Length: 173
Image 1 (cartoon, rainbow, N blue to C red):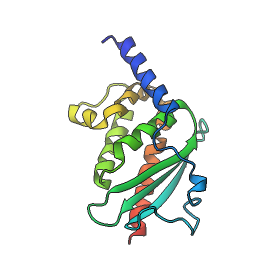
Image 2 (cartoon, helix red, strand yellow):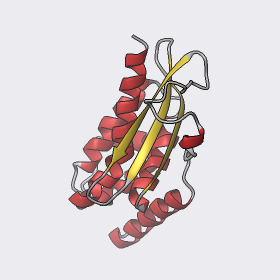
Image 3 (spheres, rainbow, N blue to C red):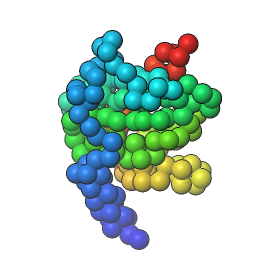
Image 4 (cartoon, one colour):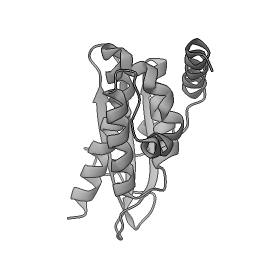
C-alpha cells in the first residue's frame, strides 16, 4: 500500500476512534475526583485511582479512572475516562482502553512502554514486529510521532493510565 493511502487509512481510524470513543463516561457522576473521600470502587476486590492530565500546549484534558484488583497478578478490572480535546488525544484514549482493559498491570506497563517508544520513533515505527503487533490499532499513531507538538496529545491518556495504576497500587499498601 502506498504511503499516502496508508496515511489516509490511519487518519480515518483515528477520526473514527475519536467520534466513537470507547471507555468514555461522565466521571463527575461517578463519585467525584480522586480527592473525594466518597469515591468507591465498583468492584469490592479492587482499589481505584484517578489521574487528571492536562496538555497546556493545546488544551487537551482527560481524567483516567482505573480499578486494579488487589489479588496478584494485579489486573485492570475497570478503566474509564472523561475529557475533551483534539481527535488525536480522544482516539488515543479510546484505543488505549481497548488495549489495556482486563490486562495485568505489568502487561499494561509493557504496552505503555511500547507506545512511548512508538511516539519517540519519529514516524519510523518499532523495529520489533511483536511489539508493534501488541499495540494493535495504536500503531495508527506512528504518523503522529513525526510531529513533536502532537506527540503530547497522543500520550496524554497513557500518562494518566500509568499514574492512576501507580496510585491504585499505592492505595493497596
